[in-house]
Length: 444
View (cartoon, rainbow, N blue to C red):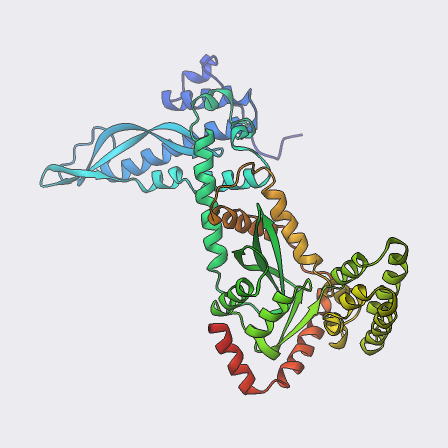
């Protein structure tokens, strides 16, 4: 049967005399290089083909400007200037190539070299920066970068540049600065924000407070970070005010989920006022209460507290928790005090009428902690932190944007319209004067 998939393609090298006799010399050489690369793998073939293609495109652009070789055109406004050694980016590395040179002509004299647009495309270093950032965030050390580089073939590898420890480090610094600028300059006016989560991550003794927005359709978006010694009110207020300045609209109400720190709650109320409803993390509360109890009492108290939080009726659940606190007053007063702190905020999601999967997702800070864990993982190979906040901020921003690539919509996102409607009903109860005051707080 006749092959319907098209003619077979066979790469040849210089030893195929019959074919070499009828092919142009330049094409024979290119095919020879590709055939040699075939023995080293597909990536090596791609690099050889890429270099040949880049050179062909640059030569074609030079032909378009200057005409063919030895063309005699007195009216032409560009002439050739030979070639010059340079490099292009292939396979995540810089590889040498000889670029054709073109000069402009004015009044019969050369008036300076003209850059080839095609060379600019092949020589751009953005790809090198992205590769460096991605591999280092994946745990590759700068000293190991060359060993995990793309398998471009031994011949090309011997000529490759920009894989040294210092070169990779410089590209990583540049790439993470871009990541930080991108994160801190994000326009948030287009986000239909419904939920805001705030938490902190420690980077070598300094705290990065980060913020994550969940939109009305369940999409998760990291929106900012601030560096400080602790999760104090000043740092958190500055972070939230910056988010508002970049256009975050909370006029329809906003659910703010925090781990229970007083500074987070205080800053949230200062910036967003009554339009924000605070849900404190139930897991943190249970953990804090257990920390004030002897080992023999922990399981029983935690089971009762977990049952109170899981009660579908928020009023009933709150009463159960208060009764538990009253009992603990007699035996473990510190545990009782820990339980009462911010207890009303443990039931905010339930009071909004949210249940099921979405309720389980929003009554804790697991979602933002998962994002933070990726930040910690990406910076795990850092052995020496410089005494500068910029390094910590760059690593944190790069980690947040790396985590964003792995995000899925939050669990229970099909219930988000129910939450949005409940927040809107709450927003309608907030007086316009308060709303004005809140915006002025955010701008302060």
